[in-house]
Image 1: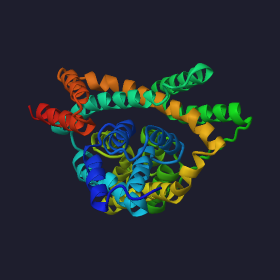
Image 2 (image 1 turned 135 degrees about the vertical axis):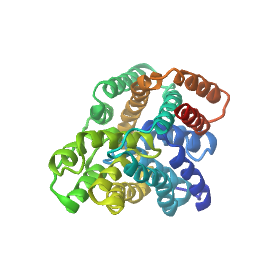
Image 3 (image 1 turned 135 degrees about the horizontal axis):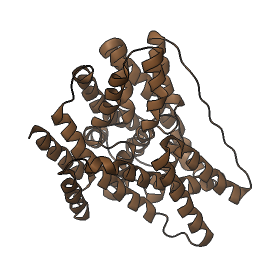
Image 4 (image 1 turned 90 degrees about the horizontal axis):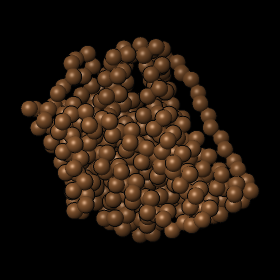
Length: 368
């Protein structure tokens, strides 16, 4: 892994900023991490980062959280990974628990909705720009390899737009095809489980979200809905929709939606328990396995698999930008945010600045 790139204060500052301004979901988080790790700090090469994205996308649980933990580990070892992961998660957790009491059973807040609309408009630009950056990493491929790369990306983009949870199958399929073409071999496995009641029920729901759900992000919504609404009756359909909205309104990982469920089931203690159970597997998966990742990515088999899964991940990023696009044109002022965000990125102001601008414009629009 090499010498630490920064100290714990540096990790806390950088990943804390990501936790505060990380609006827009997993693809926006990936874009922000790439800008920091590859472009601004130079702590990872484009290829290393692309491989990390492909690998964490295939792990169960929230992919962007696992990517954030992995990048923090690259920056300052195992302790850095823990500190960075917590700094990424905790700002959104505190905010979503505070908002749970406000939103559950109450009317929507125009200021918060305006802030979310502004952040989403800026996030579309940030995500699309990240997709372009990733795509450049595969521009050197030629011939049939280039054809396969484009096919993997297009397939993942289309599936992201039409049936999001199945994008994992495309990533796995692309990796297996590439592996089979190079090594004449192809492994693949997946597993799913069901649930029961009360605090053990809450722990089980949170564990499924964090350790048994592949794809992370919005994939957790159908996974939770039956247990939360029908089986345990912790939330009504309307309240569950509000919980999903809160997960998208707040910065940090969308999986923080599980904290709203925990709050509904058992107050602040329930929210803390649910978030802890949901995110602990991500820390364990990454911190226990990261030491072998660098070695594995240079072996022929894993290398071939990542060469297939990587372009598929790029396609999924572009698909996510297109999926968010309608939400970025729902008010008259959001196109202005998009234009300003594009200008800011072209002039090198950075993704964090673009997202902060969108948030501020949205807050002002919500107040007005």
